[in-house]
Image 1: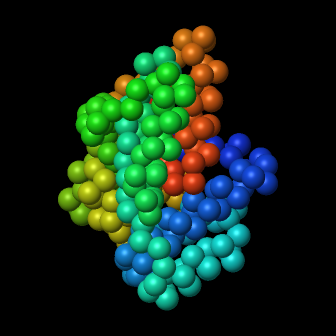
Image 2 (image 1 turned 30 degrees about the vertical axis):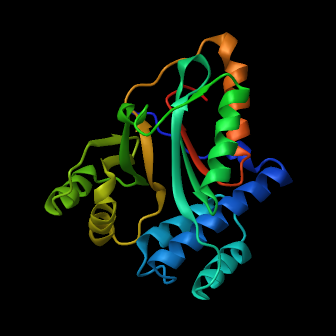
Length: 239
């Protein structure tokens, strides 16, 4: 597709330990989403999309239900969003999204990953300006004109729109996620979205030199292993 975007890697589910980390990340995000926006997926589009993604990533139903039940109880942990950014091996740029109940601990853990790999963690805005914060929808449909018309009629600011072999890809500003999704579902009914989420997309990607490839993989793996980390975005090709 015309723009590179960061998806969860299938390889994350290859071992039991990796699966447990994936389940834990989803459970935390579902809990926070349900607690803040309501436990009914029909009234909380973000929760509904999150549940759909979790099921695609083979998260067991009991993990999803437990997180929602926990949120319905009202009590429980108070998590906050923490976002870090900086430079990884080979001059790569990274953004790290976390959900944490202890921001000091999380910052120290993330910073340690940078320092152990001779990388530099930055302040807010260090690399953010080199990424677009967008909502991405990818779905199979044979009428691209109808899809684009639905978005235009809803006054959605479409950034990019592609149709490749019957697979439609739409980029819109992250602030228009709900409007875009609602316009598409109203136009076509239930859509099976291949991708339906908000991400940071690098404006330009870069190839990291071979001598930095191993360091980059180690760096990203260390960050992903942290319990509080939910998403990692970067600007490196083919990683």
